[in-house]
Length: 227
Length: 253
Image 1 (tube, rainbow over the protein chains, first blue to last red):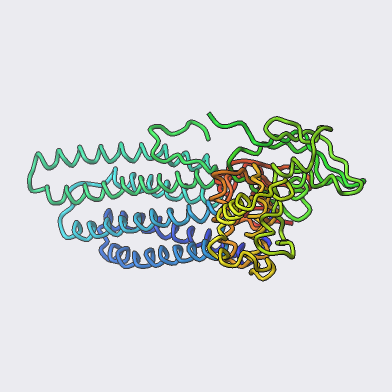
Image 2: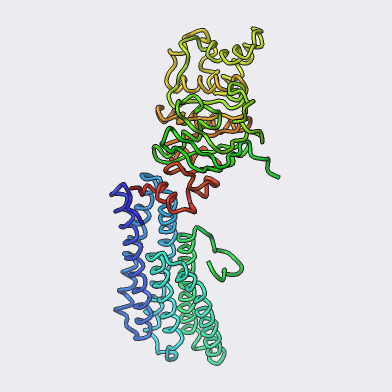
């Protein structure tokens, strides 16, 4: 792609891409740490996740400011316009993912104060899946790869299935022994948070498809088979 | 059902001596819409515009090939009178060029040339044209003052009124706001919107944001060729051709 005639514009767009990636990397780590804090009953790590959410929020505001400045000063068009509007929306999703990770960490703190209900199997799998979705959606963003983004959208079904499975399992615990209800509910919140993270990653991927192809695939009953 | 295009251009080529200014351009100008022609200097957009009312005919050594039709009638056919054609296809230029006459006489000039003598009718035409050009309120009480006393933006709107006075069907505008400040420019742009009720407009502009704001259709020219033409909204958000993308995003060279 040829460079912009205006170097400062080019540099600002590069900075935008880098900042979104930085925020994405941070958010991925937050998911991993939150779930590790849960599984390993590591309260210090859980506290760290809650504290670091401020950094995620700060990046959200910084990227918004940069986008607004770019819109006001450069009247972007075409691919640049799509990049900037996509970044604006992506950061909203990333910020929400950050909140959900912090939310998981808070549940981890509560659960660490009680005896473990059960060994964790599906929840770490959900965490791996959703983290991978976030990672690939941002990869697709930087590489402008709509096929990769489409793959993220289809991966969300796996997360939804796991959530359903976790729900049924926890329900059986609760039915069997009411003493497990508070712990099971907290775990259900964790599972729900991970399921929501998958949805946000899907939103990001859909925005990337728009950015690359200039075509909206959001809110369709069925995803297009090819782009 | 959409109306048939006001102007259809097929395989248009223009040479000045050995220089090729336009090559094999085919384009439809839709009725009652604003079509913007954009592209870097020397891309052929002004040459194209001037072909639509045969303003290029007078240039020595010019050779025009291809087919241009207004309402389906070929405008380069031997029997066509260019003066009659220009009455139907009016033009506004980059530099406002009022005659060194009164405001009234400037607007009345065209209708008089075409034989209108009746004072009352003439006054009606002048008022209507000035109103359509959004200038009436500002000049109603000084129609006999010299046109050259008006501000730059007012002079340009006077030229638009003058073009409208002969009731053309198409209005060609060659960078009509390039010499105006942002407020005068905004007035011209607002005017362009209002004029589409009655007229088909083709505008050449160097200001891409202006093309994005005022036009329904955008055509991108480069090196004498039409690269892409489509709905303005699409051309500015998701152009089909990489050359267009590079130009509208400011990647050039």
